Length: 254
Image: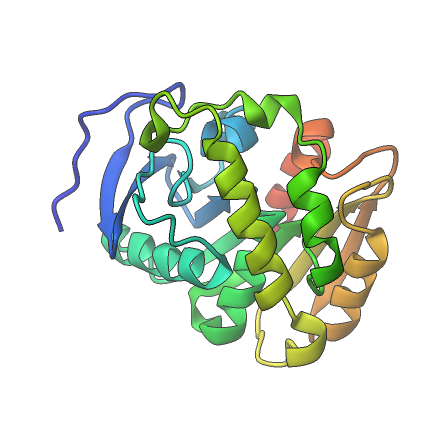
C-alpha cells in the first residue's frame, strides 16, 4: 500500500494511510517493540501524545494516529465509533508491518482498545487504557451534547473541517451516542482478552467515575489498576512522568 508523506504537523510529517472510507494521518517514531497510541474524542495525536512521544520513542517504535474525522485524518462521512476506530487500527498495523503491539488508548481511544482486544486479542501483547469506561450511559448523552467542553479541545484544528468552527460538536455528538450504544463491557464481558491490561484512572476524574475503572479490572482476566491521585480525566497530560513510567514498565515486561 502506497503511503503519502506530503503533509506536515507539529509531530513532523505523517504517513497518510488509506483505510475504508477515510485517510489517516499516522506517525511512527523510534525502534524496538511497537506501541500504538490512540487519542481521545475530539482530540488529536499531537494534543494527547506530542509531549510524551519523543521520550517514549527512545524505548520503542511509537505509532500515533489521528482518528478518522480528527486532526489530519479526513473522513467526509464521519463514520465514527469504537468499532470503526478499531478496524482502522488493524489496517494501520498491517500497513506498517506490525503484527502485535502494546495498545494504549485514552478515553474513546481506551474504549476502542478494549473493544479491539475483545474481538481481536492476537493484536495486543499488552494494553494500557486511560480514563476508559466499563459501560456507556444513555441517560447522559444529552448532558454531554449540551454541556460544556474543554476550551483546549474546541480550539484544535481538524483538516476535514476547514472554516467549520462547529466540527468538534459533530465529533462529540456522534461519539457520545456511540459510547452509549456500543460501550457495554459490563454486559458483554472481557473474558476473551488474553493480554495483561493496565487500567489507569485519575482519582479525581470528573468525566468517568473511577468506579468504572475498578469494574473493568474486576472483569478483565489479567489486569491491574493504577489510580493516580490529584489528577482528573487526562492522566497522561496531567501527570506525564507517571504515564511514561507506566509505559516503560509494560515495555520491560513485554
